[in-house]
Amino acid sequence: MKSSVVRSAAIRCFAAATAAAASVLSAGLGHAAVPLPSLNIDRTQITVSGLSSGGFMANQLGYAHSSTFKGIGVFAAGPYNCAGHSNYIACMYNATIPSSALNTMQADLNNWSGTAIDAKSNVASQKVFLFVGLSDTTVGPNPMNAVQTQYLNNGVTAANLEYVQRSGTAHVLPTDFDAAGNNSCGSSASPYIANCGYDGAKAVLTKLYGSLSARNNSPAAANYIEFDQTAFSTNPGLAATGWAYVPATCAAGEVCKLHVALHGCQQNYATIGDKFVRNTGFSRWADTNHIVVLFPQTRVDSISRSTAASGLLPNPNGCWDWVGWYGSNFAQKAGTQIGAIKAMVDKVAGGTTGNPGDPGDPGSPATCFTASNYTHSISGRAYALYGITYANGSNQAMGLWNIFVTTTLKQTAPNYYVIGTCP
Image 1 (cartoon, rainbow, N blue to C red):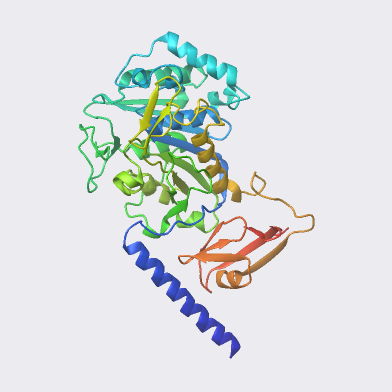
Image 2: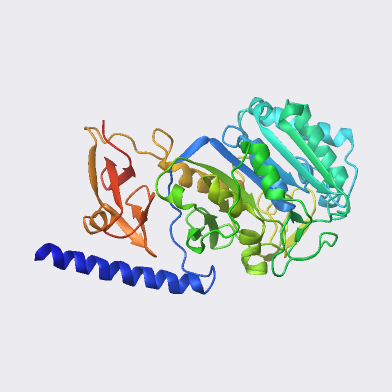
């Protein structure tokens, strides 16, 4: 009798939670932020890409944390630390970047290697994807040519570097499908996402990860997560929340890859809503290829700030910091925004056994608990948010919160549980 009461209560609770989650999700992506979960991430499969200021930031992350990021995708941006020495306009608007300027940037890489940035020798083994539209006058081919030269100068092989230049394409993230509100391929206009008959997300993910399984053109709304970014930084150029796409297989504990997709100026959630998160194609490919995608978010900052080489400037377009709004170390590991994104990556990848973020053995043989997700939650080993269960401590997603999904949790420290089994 008692077990039937508990079962009925569990079903009622799960139904209520599911109904609440469905109600929230039916309204779109706008729902309360949750903690960024720790998942079972293969740390050898962490990559980053970005468009425009997001491309500059992806480039900066790739050099500053070359031991973490194994692949880099740059859509329409410029070389590392270009605006650290020159006014930002010399790094875009199809400006020719002379070899003398590249030499100055290279001196930074040489001098900072192993200290302010990871050892530059790591760059040689990275996979690199570069893309620019030949009708792009916002950044243009010349700065991208300099990006290519810089990578080649730092040991990236021709086999590991793909550089695509497409005619009729402006300053956009290219796709091969139509989506509501997008601009035309030849127009550099909001939201800077366009059907160009070219799948940019597929191209960059293929270069970084190899052959992909067919994409899912209707990723589940429940797999999009709005997470709390203030846990990682209170930088005035960062929004309070960011977004992530977590495929169901990854939420259930499978080993997955991690890709960071960085929007450009005027592309943050506050400006264009969920278009960069949903209309760029990254989640479509991620869903069927065991890839978690992080979509960190900026915000508009209208305060004029002293920059590295461009004088006093505000950031009214919500760009990623590639000009030094938030410190002269903006391109180094200590840079505020670089540090925040790296912390997000470490949090998501913290569920990987034997990697940083895992507290390890509490000093005695680990204890494992195999039970339903509902039982784990009422026993204090997990908690539920919007119908999904998360392990206490590691915040690993365990799947649906109900009495039917069974998970084995291993306790590795007081109130710290990871998905796994005991020897």
